Each structure stands twice: as C-alpha cells, then as structure tokens.
Image (tube, rainbow, N blue to C red; front, side, top):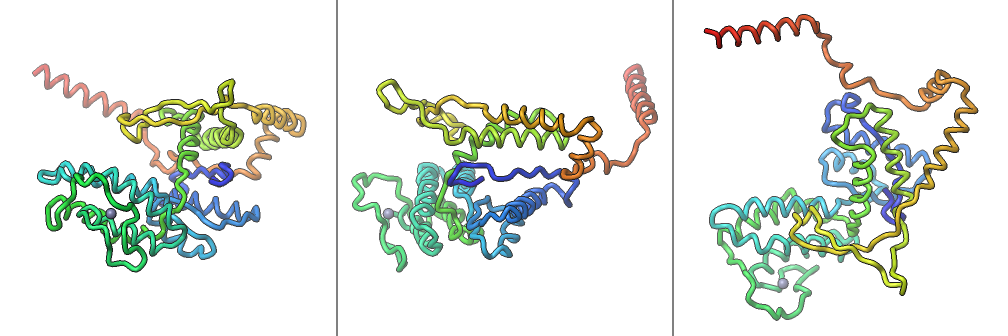
Amino acid sequence: MDLNSQTVLDIQVIQCNEVKGSTHMELEGLKRGLLKLKAERLNIKSLITDRHVMVKKFMKGEEEIIHNFDVWHVAKGVSRKLEGLAKKKGAEAIKPWIKSVSTHLYWAASTSANDGEMKLAKWQSLTRHIRNIHTHPSEKYPECRHGPLEDNQRNWMEEGSRPYKLLCSVVTSPFLMKDIEKLSPFHQTYGLEVYHNIVNHFAPKSTHFFFESMLARLYLAGLHYNENSRKPRDTTSDGRVRWQLCYPKAKKGLEAVVKPISTGPSFGYVDLLIHNLVQRRKDLPSYQVASEALSSYLSVPAPTTSGFVPVDKACLIERHKSRFSKTTNSNDV
Ligand SMILES: [Zn+2]
C-alpha cells in the first residue's frame, strides 16, 4: 500500500506449500511484490513493515530502499510485555506507565524524521523520566521537552526497585533498541486497518477458499479500498464535519474515540468488472479457451493437500469401527 495516496499497489497470495514453511510466506510475498512493482518501474524509496526477522535480513540487501518498522506493531509488542509484567507480584507500579511508554514511542518516532540516533536518545530518556529526572547524559537529547510539570504527584519510580528493573528490561532490551532507530516516522496504520476490515468482508476467515477464489476476493477488496479510501468526509447542512463515536477493540473497548464519518461507499469498480467480463466473453469463445488463457499468466500452486500421503479410506473406516466396537465391548463388560 502506498501510504501517501492510500492506494493498494499490489496483492500477492502465497500458499504454504509454495515455500519451505508458513514462516517463509511473508518474505516470499514481499519478494514477489517488490519484483512486480520494480518491473512496473515504480521507484520505491521506503518500505514500512513489521519486525519480521527474515524480512529484516532480506531488506539489508535492498540498499536503495529505506526500511522502517511500523510503530504500531512495536508499540503493541512493548505494551503487551509490560502488561504481562505488571501482573507480577510487587510489579503493579508498572501499570500506570504503560500508556505513557507507548505514547512516548510514537512521539520519539514521529518527531525525529529519519534521525535514528535522535529516536534512540529520546526513547532512552524514558528510563530517567520515569524516575522524575528530566535531564539526560545525551548530546542529542539532553533534556525532556515537556517543560515544567504541573502535576508532580505522578507514580515516579525508584531506581533499583523491582517494577523499575522489570520495566527497564523491556524498554532497554537489546533486541528492541536495535530496531528503535529504524522506526517509521509515519504511523498511518488506520488505512491498513480499514483495508484489513474490507478483506475480512470479502474473504471471511471462517470460510476456506481455494487459491483462485482467494486471489479474486483479495483483488475485489483492493479495488473497493482504492475507490473508497479517499472519500470526502460527510458534512452537516451547514458544512461541519460529522463525527462518529466508537470504542476500538485495540483499546479493549474501554476508551472512546471519534472518527470522521465518510460519505457512503461507491462501487464504480463493479461496472468496470462487468464491462471487462463481457469483453472477455466476446474475445474468448469457450470456457476452455478462457481457462487456457488464464493459465498463461496465472500460475496456480498445487492444492495444499497434494503433498499428503494417499490413504485407504475403507481401511480407515474399518479401523474406526473396530475401535468403536472395542469401546462398546469394554463398556458392556
Ligand atoms: Zn521528563
């Protein structure tokens, strides 16, 4: 997805038997997507992903593309870990800080442009700020920018205390620190969330779809999103933007937020699809010819069951029956 234009640029469906295992699917999807976009002569300057280990390694080789990590994924991971620690005995003092830690991460990433060292310095200042110390041994970020604090009754932590040590074990974990410098200065994940909701509508997770149907449904989701992602906001008769109150699942339904109401969706892409379908019917006289034409540019992987060892169904039925009769017999006895 191009975040600037809110447009889905490419969709790849990877079936698990096309790669070594399910953990390789994400990387394979990315590789194919990049190849396709490059073939379209698209100049990719930066790419935002989650912190998938294989993706990180692969992107080191793509030197011309700036690789950033999505802050939302990182903040979610940090918050989850802190929530887990806050449940430990004697570590309850972590809880009031969880939201601030997450907000600080977003702030450090979004206010430092591409200056990785600045992102890291701002992030590290947290370990002093929570002890009510607002100057830091860093040339990049020597002092907190919040100014004098009016409310000095916060739950400041003490150095060496159990909650402080536990909180620092997450905040300063080497694995996390290594990635802070590469946090994306943008966090427009809202568009991606909307797209995923549309995907869930066209391809519900509760239903199994074969490769071609899945691909077609994802293309539909992409077409619907691209047509509707930049809809003008709905306004009242006197021109004021209308807002909708909602309780996001991400905030566990505990916190209300507002979002602007968009004008209703349009379905212009359906007319285009029908037009193309009629044209295709005219060009390709039979289903067989159409099917052959499709296979020339779409390679469909073998079904996931194709790697299974053939079984004798009759034999399995007999085995099932005999096991059942044994149980019955033992009950009789
Ligand atoms: Zn501070």
